[in-house]
Length: 390
Image 1 (cartoon, helix red, strand yellow):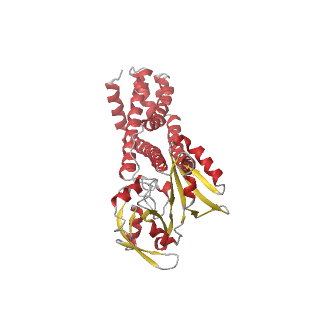
Image 2 (cartoon, helix red, strand yellow):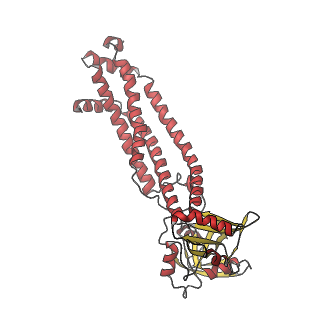
Image 3 (cartoon, one colour):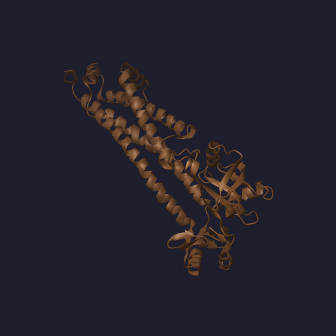
């Protein structure tokens, strides 16, 4: 049962050593802030990454020559559609355009409004814009728009074709979904413009994406495609997901290093706290024993005292981490994952209240600190009052 007198005494005891206890609260708050921020950023980015993977094609087919991808013939689509279970095969034309002014790469994607679209983003594009009116227009991601604006391209952009000629294309819009990894560096435009900019034969494509009737048949159909076209590389959505997770796991190693540094700092505080009490604290316990306090009473007092410090630090640390991650969008720490490129995605980490995360940080911080406070106090409190005072 909670004893309010012990709580009041513990708070008064803490106030008598303000400087020391404020320093401990600040230090613990910073460590809990770092721990919870690391976990929240990591979880949020992983969720965003996996959501992006879900929007990728079920099967992607590439043409290989000498181990490198080359353009693929569009006539392969007719043969693919003969395989049972394939509902559509769409030739894509896309590529990376290098913008030397900012040392950045844009992803140019060509869209045909009469083709079936494999992404909702592309479907929205074909519905929103009149292709007859935007023969020389494009829609850009938020990162692209920002980069172009820095070079004073606010209404149009001059692409340099492979022939060296200039192709002026108007900026007719920006993606509504500009908060995701998916759209940041993307430019959508009619297919004819992409063919012209990259100098690609209209009978060829960058790759072919395949949609199947039943998801459970993806691996079987991928094997059939591989048998039909032995020289093609067939990539399933699941394989892409594994690749993304491997990349994420590599990046997570950086966060793991930070986590270990923070954890080591926390345990140094615990070790220092548990190594023993100073003479002033021993004297205080001795006086309380002399006036009739039992060992249990002293342990209750120390428990409430350490609980107040740990709880306040935990609360302040989590509030600061939520503000840092979801309001300030985690500057510096987020860059460890996304890099420092001018085209790094400017997206907000998706908010999610993960109770397992709250519990994990709680059990890492609070019980250990309380135990580190109570144990040395118990060693002193079990002695006789006169021995303690001496």
